[in-house]
Length: 81
Image (cartoon, helix red, strand yellow):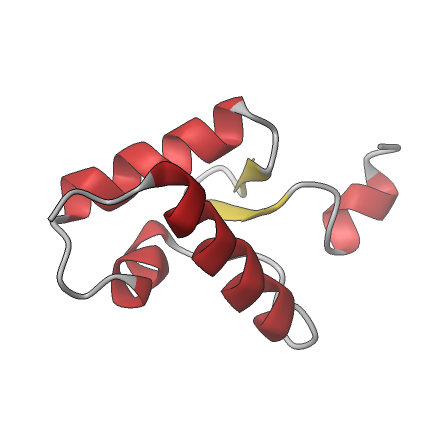
């Protein structure tokens, strides 16, 4: 079954908002867990599309790349967004 973009977007935003109280950035592998029946490549494509649509954003520490809701988390406040 192909992953529907709008449906997947809703699931991802809901799950991230629920977890954002304790954590604002996630590894790509965390997103795979939201859709256990999907191939990682399909989930990665959805995440990349959501970054393009400015729903999510990448954050890098230099050695690690993480993903979070755009404008959420400590970095958003310090980066002047």
